[in-house]
Length: 257
Image: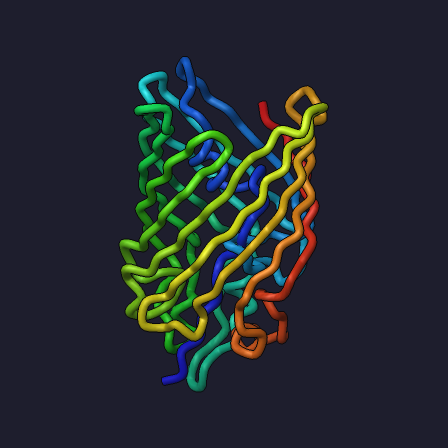
């Protein structure tokens, strides 16, 4: 049976759950809320809203001991846009909810972060398109930060993003944050997504994000994103012919309170 799937996309560093996972541990217990909008939702380099804007928001609890919990959500379109295989039907699912928790600590000048992440697509019927499984995904992750650089490793504990027999798929993420002064920061990123038993869709992604702190909890971002994903393969995943692996420029606005 012909296999069809579609991936989540690489989001702006300031607008996704991934950003919360690499923030430093708090000196005291805190609760923080965030809401935002991006011109296109990208995660790990791939488009998840077929080039359209997305509304996003979340809440994070950080304990002074280093433990943290959070939830983050975004509107999506990749499930509804999935191209049905022969004998399959259209799928439903317009919302992503990320549930995550972990522990942050420091040793010998290196900041560590280990945790679990659940991508929940409430009520999704992605498996109905044929050749796929439910899109809900569980991952474990670990990262180490030294100076401005962070190296992070993620491994799926279930089938990943609708790929059948893909448990154990991995993602490596190398990024750095450079303070440019006057509220500006620059974040270069490179990642490698490997899909177990489906290497056709494995790819490398790179991004460069410029962030600006506008004050009073408001921040803006501009990202240039590119991937090595096979254009023909990714176009075939979409019933509208959208290529989620193509290069893109994404702008975002976020308010944290």
